[in-house]
Image 1 (tube, rainbow, N blue to C red):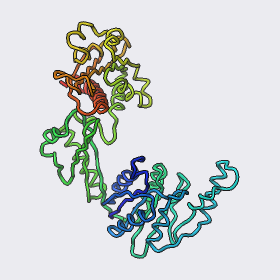
Image 2: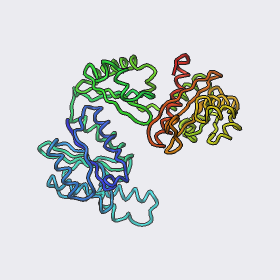
Image 3: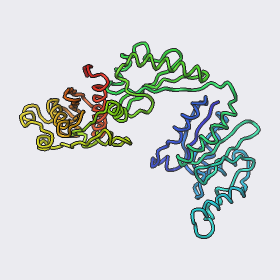
Image 4: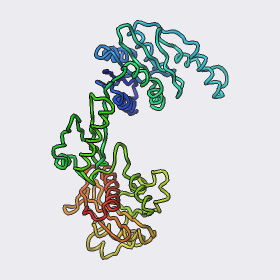
Length: 421
């Protein structure tokens, strides 16, 4: 089955709202074997909606829309699509009574706002898709030629709920038995440039055994996504298991997780398993590393605290960095980072300390230490290791990548203590 997605809303075109709905639908539908062949976005105007949906129907005969089902004057999805099918609009009394009940339950004084009657207007011959997550019902509209449009709300929480509750079961029914799937697995890597990964992967760099491979770089590293198409679910699972195992063998410690794993959460779990505590000492990241760790629920049983040592004076007085070290090597040096880490671990009586110092820019760089020079050190119960990666990007990207690199060094020291970084 080939399907097109049309997301509706001026706010999407203007960039005020990020379209997460299409991405969610694409992932969920691919998992049951539906191919999303095109995604488009149009404004709230009736002509814009009708044109986008009509063109999509002409190409595939199957369209899912999100947005434009609310009670305001710019919510024109239903009448615009009804016109394509030559259907009139009618008032659904059951939906109207349900809406009145919702407003009464809210304690609304008087009658329901008249604008909400629009949500009870349904195209003739349409199937109402129940919405347990909000007030706007979804609509399924089809014709004798087998063409169909599923209309879902634009509010992401409501759309996701309705996708699981009513859309996917209905699409599965149309697919029938013995359906092939589109399945993917993602390996998360960090600390290796996108261009270097093919060399590490060797013959696996372009995919293998019927699996395609995509490289997805970001500030936190490069994700590697394996995709299997055109196979039954059990066969796809076996093929992906084999592919993931082969890639892990090639990449080793470069891989830190799967899917959407957060490196901070993985590090916390490693520390928890070992009954160890951690502290941070930060300069250029300004608290970002501590924020990554404490954003994880339950981190208080592992994270003791930290110091933002931006000024050299704070590095000396709070972390015990020697004045001679700063004078000889500078604040941005592995020597300073190592003393920051050891000083923090000692003062907090922690098992592990991680320190970051560097030049995030846009100013402050020199020929010897350009913007993006970062020094990271980790002290694990007295064993200290440091690295000096060259980090690229603007100020925000450098800070984010530095925090990720620091977490990566902690992980490597815990999992591979004898490894050279």
